Image (cartoon, rainbow, N blue to C red; front, side, top):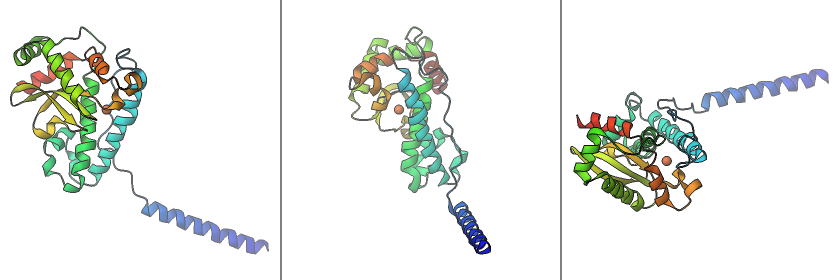
Length: 235
Ligand SMILES: [Fe+2]
């Protein structure tokens, strides 16, 4: 009896081992981490009271992380893309394999847009651009106040989910908006500043009051960062 039980146990163990072995051979490997979630660069509560800590934590740790993860899955399905930057991929979207193009646009756009967004924000230090960017904004829009109005209007008018942008395009500063996670890079522009108006960016604190969130954003723009991008794009 003992011998028979041992034999049964041996068979069961062998069967189990074979099953585990089969799973190990057939389980899909996790995609390589070609793209990584960049650190926020400041504390979650750094932008309080304008943008609350809970929103920043979920927005960065969950939403942006999900774009990065799905982007890595798309890149894993299209060999060669892992050598390119996300900017290069978005600028040349038509050259990417059609099977992954939509994911690159949505998930890659989500990664590029949010990476820029975190860097564009800072605890208020005066709330106005200076130097060459200030001059260019005055020349392009009439005044900084008029730029604020135009940018706010573009952000308010985004239907559903999307972004408002200050873009360097055709050697000019322009205000634009895009739906979903479309980046101005796709159409040849250089995004200098972007405002995320997806509800996930403001709903916890502002609920349906998007205009209040848009106004609050104006208090936390990192104009030094935007100026540096402008100088780089315009040279
Ligand atoms: Fe977002």
